[in-house]
Image 1 (tube, rainbow, N blue to C red):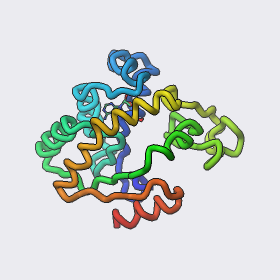
Image 2 (cartoon, rainbow, N blue to C red):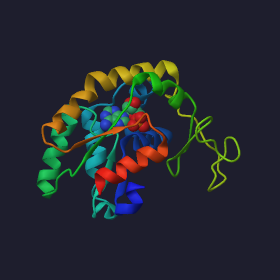
Image 3 (cartoon, helix red, strand yellow):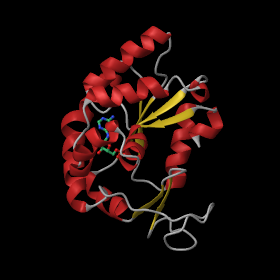
Length: 195
Ligand code: AMP
């Protein structure tokens, strides 16, 4: 919704890393082990990907950073990159949610890798199980969308990523959203904070 309404490009480091792993590029080979374990990939690798991706023509009107920055080090490197380009972060959306709600959401999630569309067996099922509504292509379940890997991903989030929220609070750009609500309500909250 944000991408379409504001004509921005959507840069999701997780999607870019998964594509690199699938294509077995040198970057993918380096990232795979950490991703499989639910740990973070090194700051240098992800900052390099973002630096490159932001140069795309589709990003000239602005960009949505999704899943990045995930450490204070990445946030600082991002600031340096943006300063050089004379641009700044307008808003940071904190999709706040209790850990206990996440297991059901994550383990029931199905993805259409090419578009990033996501479904859920219980909350947002596709018309035909395992098939994307729009293209008819197969859906996949992420290898790290298991209860066991989620545990490490949450540990990494609390230890390494939560401080990033404080980093941006100090800059006065954070909007805290109630991500435990329904997709419709969360969408409305997003529209409100961006308008
Ligand atoms: P995501 O799709 O955002 O959940 O990311 C999936 C996995 O990719 C994470 O668990 C990390 O291993 C890796 N990853 C994605 N973005 C980052 C980032 N900004 N910093 C470090 N690792 C990342």
